[in-house]
Image (cartoon, rainbow, N blue to C red; front, top):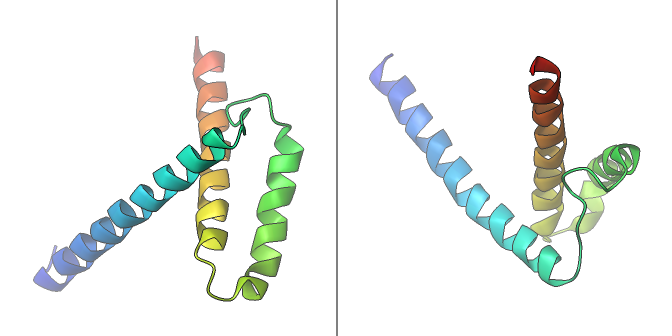
Length: 91
């Protein structure tokens, strides 16, 4: 890897780390508000639709940083479900 590529990777890792902190805080806020079901009880198709709706409407959020955080946290929830499904099938 070149020095420029190493620098790029370092910046990417830093961005992901900072974003993950925001995601964790947002998720904790939602749990405190009573939200649950992210790991299976909440309907998968609803979760997918919310991602599509948020992505379609992101320009309407103006400066609200939560729009991108909400998309990312929902994507994590999908990833989690698919990972668990793979693990269950592998057993």
